[in-house]
Length: 247
Image (tube, rainbow, N blue to C red; front, side, top):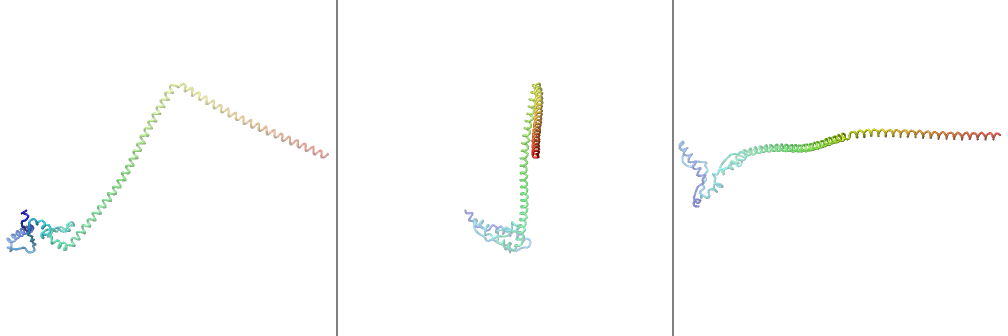
């Protein structure tokens, strides 16, 4: 508590005085410079309590060094706080050029980022399409594999069935060979008999047709004879009538 109540001067002023003394010593050895304040040097006349030093250094010390407001644009100038306005007003064009340069660089970076984003989007879309095509191809391949497996299973079942049928037929044929031969012969004989029956039926139909034609001819002949008789009879009657008329 007592330390905070001690009277002190500005630490920056103290440091500046130390530097001035060193410079004066160097100059006195060379030129014999007179004692006193160096012209053009700013002095801080702060005298106060130790507890007030921090607030003084941060807010009111005229020896406080500050950076240029355009440091982020490339100006590395440092000066006393109260002279910063002089620096700003005397270097407007410099600061403007730095801002324009930074703005152009920023625009260039933005264009590069936009180009990179466009490329990334294109690559992303291409990758999506490739993944979709790959997914479709995988589905088609899986479907074809499934069909192939099913075909192989069906083929194996068919081959197994054929082998089984051949084996059964061979077993039956070897066991009933004589009976099968007799049955085949009987079947051939039966077929021949059926064919003969059909031939006989065909001949019967032809005979019936001929009989019907003969009967039709006979009827026509009889009808013609009857017509001739009627005509002759009518002629005779007409002749007799003519003779009677003459008599």
